[in-house]
Length: 126
Image 1 (cartoon, rainbow, N blue to C red):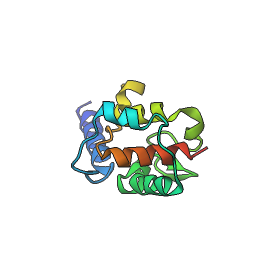
Image 2 (image 1 turned 60 degrees about the horizontal axis):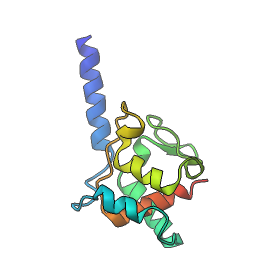
Image 3 (image 1 turned 45 degrees about the vertical axis):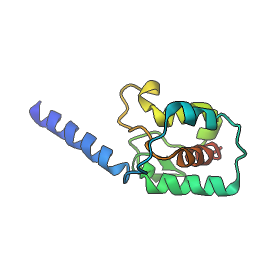
Image 4 (image 1 turned 180 degrees about the vertical axis):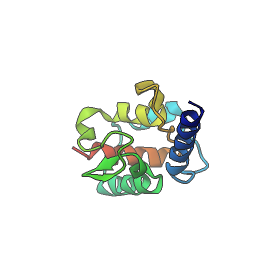
């Protein structure tokens, strides 16, 4: 039992570290971010490209797969843009434990612009 607890702790620590480097020093305030991602801004190809870069830089693929590429700890993200709207997607990224209290996914801690770009990228996965 002790070995199982140690293994679980080490797995959690590894996942937390693997979610990528510190995204940026500026934290996103939930209120500001939610106002920005409610669809009021035009989504551009460059924003989606930036979102893909944020996805890559922050290590999302450590746990999530897209088109079979990536981890299997979290759900695959194929079609995620059909499942949620941009507001809900932003909320999940900021507070993943609200959707699933048992998740090991850490909250997004990057800039508002990076959050918006990541949401735009994920919403493009339809």
